[in-house]
Structure formats: structure tokens, C-alpha cells
Length: 349
Image (cartoon, one colour):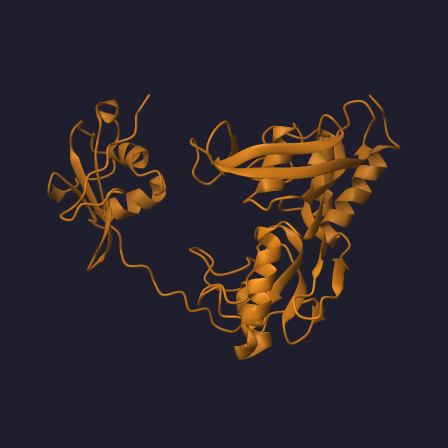
């Protein structure tokens, strides 16, 4: 098993093996004995877990990687223990989202905030690979200069996020005062957040509280995972509202989840940890659903994780009024639920 490479500074000492160069960030490391003989791109992926293997292959092809002071030969070259590696990352492009007149379903709006029903497929804000078409782009077009700037140039007004392929209620701040107040409510977990998930099978037990540590998976940097140590506390309350197909070992279920904390991918990871991942989840949906459920997914046209932020409730940061917004399942999840319900009238075996 390959162990992590040790990190060494480049010119100026840096505890993380990083510095800012004229061309961008410089990463340095020394390959350890466990990487000897591996393909260079694989060895580098172990040494620099923050970079994907595909990204490293691109950097190698661009000549951005040096081994012992000379340009690396290529991704398929063999790694050598003790080799000193330097990677010069290109400078990040300034994130300056532009206004885009995208459709918005607005549930509430005043001078301080705006509440929308975000569709699946729309990212909350620009990020690598998603430069536009985001909620931020739409809000800039709708709200103009009134959008709060606390989130920075890339995330103006964004107080919390939903995954790109999770639909549902989101609030954004239009004033700095509202942004600070809403951020404080989220930090204190003084927000009502209720989600609806359609899952493969049903979680066991059928209702309860899941409390774990969540953090980046040590095996796949794109995924979050339940950790024994490290990470951050994550708490989800859940209740199986309906089982589909059969009562004992159901084929699928509708599960309501309430968040006490709001960690990245929290509900998706927690439900998967109870043996009931969201249907259609490309990251955490390990194991195939039953044939009847797969057919229902195809007929419903579901092409993302079946997760919807149905309820958002909070105290208005200026008026003190208690606000609560609830939205129905979007069409793809509603169609899937209807087809799953039909399984109850079919064979029970």
C-alpha cells in the first residue's frame, strides 16, 4: 500500500509544502518508498491528494511537473522513491460571475432577502467546471447591485448551499446585515430544514438520529465519508414515511430528514450509511436497486439523486417574523414516487 509522500518547501519554508509563485501556486513533495515503480500519475495522486489523477495528467502534459529539477517524462513514467517533485499550478482565473436572465421560482422577496425554489441541475455558485448558469448568475440579473457582497465576488448573497442536483428551497441575502444575521442562524443551527429523499430500500431502523463525524473520504477526494476521527460533527434526524414494494425489506422508501447540522453531502452520506442511499445518487448509491425500481427510475426520467429540500424556516433577520416555506416534490421525483407507489399493488415476493 502506498504511503503519503512527505512535503518539503520550495525556497521559502512552508508547513504545507505550498507557496505562491509568479505563475501560480507551487506544490512540492518527496515521493516515498511505497510509490517506487508506480506510474507517475498514480504516485503523484498519492502525494497530492488535493489534485485528481486526471488533473495531474493534464499538468504533466503541460510541462508543469518537475522531477529532481527536470521536466517529468510523462504520466506513464515510473516513479522513483526519494524523487523531489515540484508542480506549478496555473494561476486561478478570477471568479467574476456575470448576470444571466435565468428562470427563477421566487417564493419570497423583500429588501433584505430572497427565497427561491432551486431546480435540480443548477449549482448554487460558480466553481471549476461550472462557470455560469448558477443561482448566483440568476440572482445577479434579478437583484442587481442589491445582492449582499459578504460571500465574495464568486458567491454574493450565498448563505448556504444545496448540491447542484438537489432541488428545493434556498435563501440568499440582499443586504450585508441580513447576510450576517442569517449566517449566525445557520451557525447556531436555528434553522428549520426538512428534506425528502426517495431511497433504495429503507434505512434501519426506520426512524432515528444519525450522529457521526463527516469529512473527506481518504479513498476518494470527491466523496465525503463517515470518519472514526477528525472531520466535523454531523447530525440528521430521519423518519421513513412510506415503504414501497413490500413492508418487509421494501424495495424503496420515502424518507423525511431534518438537519441539525449542514455538512457537505450530509443526508446522502448518512442515508447510505444506513443501507438506504438516495435513488439515482452517482456518488453514494452503491448497489443496484431492484429491477422494478430501475424501471420506475427510467420511466420517471430521474437523472440525479432523489433528494429535495422541501422546507426552510427561519426568523426574518430584520422584522423578526417567523417565515416558513414549503415546496412540493419536483416533477421527476413526483413521477418516481407515483411509480414506486404502484409497486405496492404488484407482486409482493
